[in-house]
Image 1 (cartoon, rainbow, N blue to C red):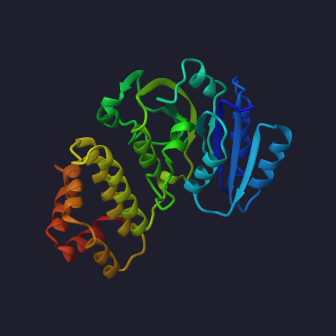
Image 2: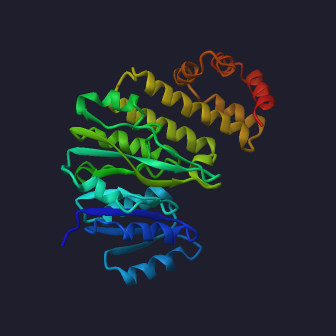
Image 3: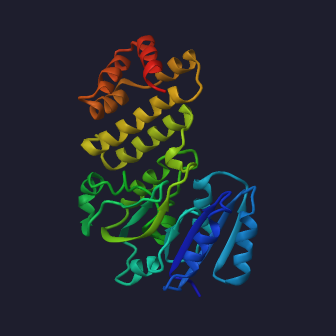
Length: 320
C-alpha cells in the first residue's frame, strides 16, 4: 500500500544524533508514512544504527550510497520515495510528535505548498522560533513570498510539505554542484509549479545548531561563486530583470559572503586577486546595494572600480 508521506533523512556520520532523530519520527501520532534513511557513505556507525531500526519497523528503507553530499542523498531519497508527499528531516535534528499530523490534518493537494516554522536550538541550548505568521499566498504573490523570507531566511527544505508528483513530473532536483543555498534554489524552482502557499504557525521541527553545522561552514570560492550563479539563474527564471529589492539583497549578501571567504580561507594574494577579477560589475552592484550606509559599501566600491591591490590590502587588515 502506497504511503501518504515519505520522510527523507540524509545521513552522514550522524551516530551521535541519529537515535534521537529516528525515534522522534517513529513516535509520530500520524502513522501512514515511509521513512527513507539515505546513508551517504558514513564512516562511523550510522549505517549500523539505520539497519537496526529497519529490522524493527517495516516502514523504514535504508539506502547506502558512496559519499556525494546532502543534495545527492536527498535526490536519491526522492527517486526511491513512493509517498504522495515528501518531508525532509536532517539527521542531527528531531521533531515533535505532532509534526506530520499538523501537515496532513487539513486539506492536502499537490498544488498546495505548506510551510511551517521551526524551533532553533542554539549552541547554548537557547530556543528561538522562526519568524512567520499564518498566511495564504496565491501564485501571483510569489514576489511577496520571497519578500517575506520564506525562500531566503526560511529557505531550508525542512518543515515544508512537497508534492512528490510535482517534484517528479518537473524533474526538480537539488543541484549536487552547489554546496550552499541549494535548498533555496530547490524551493524557487518548486514554487513555480504550485497554485497556493499556506504558511502555518507550527514550530514542531527542532533545528539543532552544532559547531559543525552547515551555517557555520566556509566553502571554497569556486563552490560559492557557482552557487551564486545558480541562485541568480533560479531567481531570473521568475523575475528576468531581478527587480525585487529582496532578491537583490539576497544575491548581494551571498556574494559578500563569497568575497569574505577569500580572506578567511588560506588563499595567496595572487589567488585572491585572480578570483576577484572573475566577479562582474553587474554582480558587484548587488553587494553595493545591500551594504549602502556601511563601511563595507566603500570597500566594495573599491572592488567595483578595480582597485584590486588596495581592496586586498584593506581586507587583509580588516578580516580576521
